[in-house]
Length: 77
Image: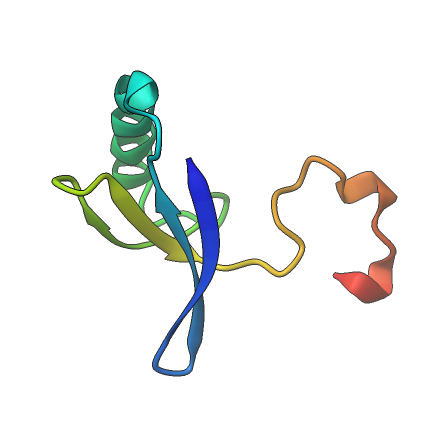
């Protein structure tokens, strides 16, 4: 999967596109979970998707995912 920072009107979005069909089932499951958990303050907001093109648009977070949250300083959040 490739993820890009996209702009729509004045909003930044995360544009994700599946680029390896081997992971199609994982991609579909991830989209299903995003739909299932909307809205939630604990899950990124799903803004849009295209199942025919295997694309999702979600809210953008400048610091990416929370894997390295303990190493980020308070001023960068």
